[in-house]
Length: 376
Image (cartoon, rainbow, N blue to C red; front, side, top):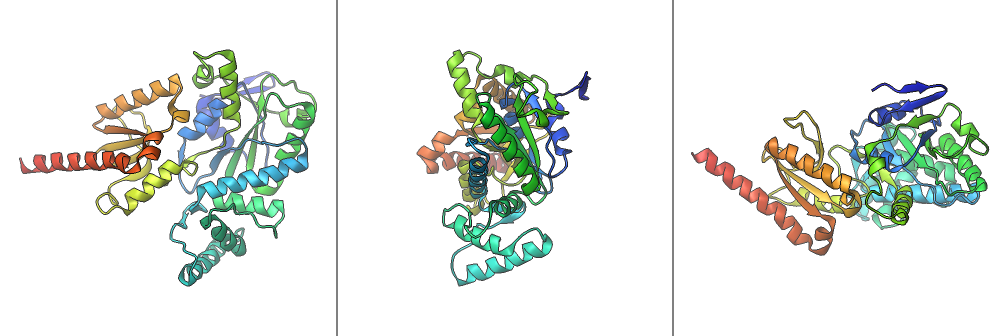
């Protein structure tokens, strides 16, 4: 659907939101007015890109008492995201092989040099130090670099093909915090090489200190997701959920790689790729074309066995609308010949071997059925 001009206001439909913000040039700011940032988070989580596309990052600002504190906190939070994405950095590089020994460090030096030769924005010394820190469980923050250099290198580690930051402004911020947030957003656009989309509460008037962001701002049309948020809950619970969502970072997925913010996906994927019986079977974060013409994204797919494995966290699937959407996707996959196995994050945390055993049992069953069919 095309965006709608309503006087001086440009209304963007949810279906075209990601396409529109992808077109915002690097280093530019394009404000978006909306009622609830959760609809944006859902769009980001449902999006499945490739290593060659820009990456969407839902990036809350946690400390905007002053602009200086805001930039410092931004640097820390971005480093946390980079650490969470470990070992999958720079789009197509997997540093899971790294070991802090002579051979590992020699290979790391060559990898860093190769990255810099292929992309002159990458600083080899940052790569080497960052890998050392992340492999040891620390944040990739170097005291020798200023905040601008840290943020620029961190953004490249998350994606060398560009980033779109979507930054929710909290409705409860007082004017001085709003002013600090505006300054932080402008600093990020100047120094990150990314497009920056401030998400401005609809109820804020076009007045200082955010007026310069609202010039030619877009407005996100109401979605079913934002209307669903908080249904069946008390006003207090709904408000608490909204605040939790605003303050939770999010990142779009990349086809073939586990979600960078899901330790469960990364752990399961690491196990499957090292298991001799299942290493060549599954693909991570894929789309499936159903008989209904839809293309749902699935966590794990064994194409030949027509098995889909979904790894569910309550935060992602606990709302009624999300629960119903998941079940409808299961129906479409079932009618398209796929068997869906859902495993909760709690199951994996509680008994990893038992959770993996479910996947293994289903694989064995499918192989035995296929073997029997071939003998007939």
